[in-house]
Every structure is written in C-alpha cells, then in structure tokens.
View 1 (cartoon, rainbow, N blue to C red):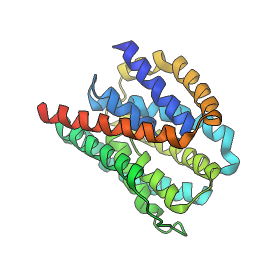
View 2: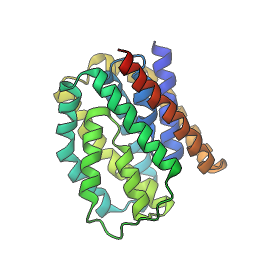
View 3: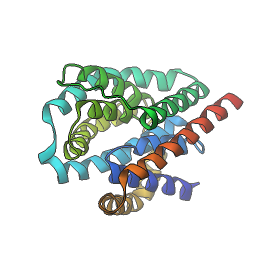
View 4: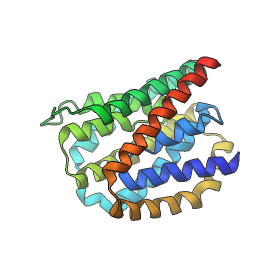
Length: 240
C-alpha cells in the first residue's frame, strides 16, 4: 500500500504545483479508496502545507493580502464544524457527500459559462467559512476558494499567489485541528515522510509543466477524471 500512497501524493503535489490548487481534490478521493477518510484527509493537507510554503516563498509579492486575510479568518469558524462532521458522521455518509461535492464542483467548472463577478471582498467570509468546513471535514478547502478567485477576476498571478497565501495558514489550522482530534497519527506522519521526496520532485515537475503545456486543456482532463472519481466514491459508499 505504501507505494500506492506515495504515487497518489506525488500526483496530488504535481497538480497543486501546476495549477495552484487541486491537490486535495485529487489526493483525498484516491486515498479514500485504500484507507479511511480520517487518514486520507490529514495526509492530503500535509501536502498542501508543504506546497503552500514553497508557493508563498516564490510568489509572495502577488498575494492579495486583504482577501487572503478575510478568507483565513472566516475559515477558522468553519473548521470546527468540519472536524465534527468528520468524527461524528459515518464514513459511508462522508464518502457519499465527498463524491457529490466533487462531481458538482467539477461539473460546474466544466459547464458553467457564468459571467458573475464580485467587485469587492464583502462576501469573502462566506467562501472562507465554506472552505473551512470542507477543509476540516475532508481536507479539501479548495473548491470555495477557487470559485471565489474566479468570481473576483484576479489575474493569474494574483489567483495563484493569493490561494497560496490562504492555504498556508488555513492548512496549518486544519492540521492543528486534526492533531487535537487525534487524527494526526504516527501512521499519517510515517506515510507522509516516506512520500516527501516524491512530493518535492512532483512540485518541481509541476512548475515545469505549468510553463509548457496548455493548462486549460489539462484542467479539463483533471476535472473529467475527478467526476469519475466522485462517481466511484459515491457508488463505493452506497455498496458499503
């Protein structure tokens, strides 16, 4: 199983490096096929912490500080609710909901032609809160934040950098919550340390790919794959 875990975390880190988000959308569903969600979520969030440290160090000048701060603060109120969902709700229900969230998010991303735009940060708290709930429960706080960045019409540089500015403190808060809840276990740490060299390699390769391929086409493939993963998770939960 260890090689499979390393391969999944490599893929998750690669996606994060290439596009600035998406590692939990890849990592948590795939890891959930071979381990409990309670272990998959902390593992995936640890990848997010490492990727955020690297991303902030490289792109800190482009971070939209006000947006990032508002999103982080509002996330703090959602994380405890997410942690409660993770520990109190049966795993089959967690997998079902996770599958539905992934399907809806990816389908919206692929099909929506909405021209909606947010001209200020006044709704940042709602997106940050939703990200906190999803982050605490499933380690996947990305979807609400990606939606928010799209609605704010940030430049690609601001989009990538501001997400890293959000993910670094929020992911660390989520990991603190996992530790408090007893979910950051020695097995989680052991799996992460085994995968660490692969994660660094994936981040390096992802940066190279980011500069060389048609990112729009690649994102389409990623989201199409995520829809299949979401369907698989939902069916797995129903069968259990």
